[in-house]
Length: 49
Image 1 (cartoon, rainbow, N blue to C red):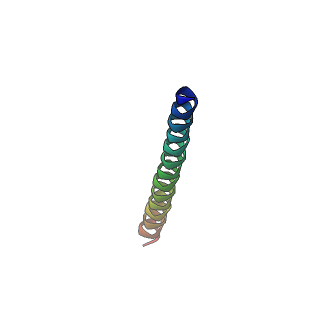
Image 2 (tube, rainbow, N blue to C red):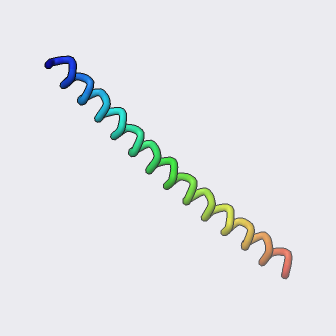
């Protein structure tokens, strides 16, 4: 019985870690994409002057 509880604990931790890692990755990608688009717009505005 103790092995089953241990597997549930470890498996639950792995799932939680996976979800948190995915959320952090998504947030970082979103912020980087936003910065790239801003940079492109700034370059375009600078070329128009």
